[in-house]
Image 1 (cartoon, one colour):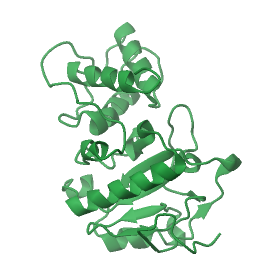
Image 2 (image 1 turned 30 degrees about the vertical axis):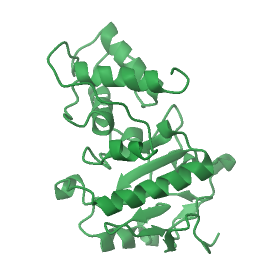
Image 3 (image 1 turned 90 degrees about the vertical axis):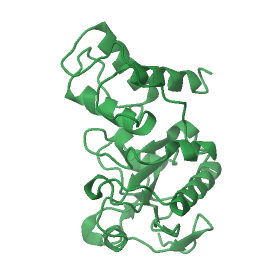
Image 4 (image 1 turned 180 degrees about the horizontal axis):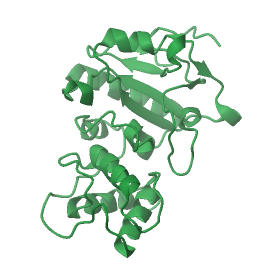
Length: 253
């Protein structure tokens, strides 16, 4: 299917050949945000449109705020890889992927320019409105693939997007001393933590063991919702933030 006009009116058309049918007629109800994680915008832009790469996204947002659409929203772009959210594994079929030009962790995690964040916010608002995407389903790549991915990273300003109506956010719990859970521990408190993370949507096994997989999920959670300290330790602040997020979900509010 050709991309003959943008779904988002502010986008330039830059078609990628890397896409397919959304499986089982799935309509997108997730916005998945990434950073490009490459040394230059040009190399990332080319990579997303090269058949050999076998990767793409629906949109890429440059540092100057320019938005390019690569794949029609009705199509399945190839950006999420092996991933899961709320028990669903084919995140590519369930999502609209937005790549944000930023070198990310390989490049020292520089700040995202204001004009770029404004453009990302406008794009997300438009997509979420047209597809009725719930705020709690505006996610990071690291949320759905915590063992593999770190993007868009702890420097991404989720709170700023939320203030404009994009995404789910609560004030993070204050960093302070107190009881904490960490890798190597086991028991009912670990099982309760895993249950809460799974309830929110994270792909974590509820086995009562704070294993490496659980640590990776805690790190992903902190990157998104408690970025002041990303260490994989479920301290008072992390658990309090998780409680607040769940309590703020529409079905519990």
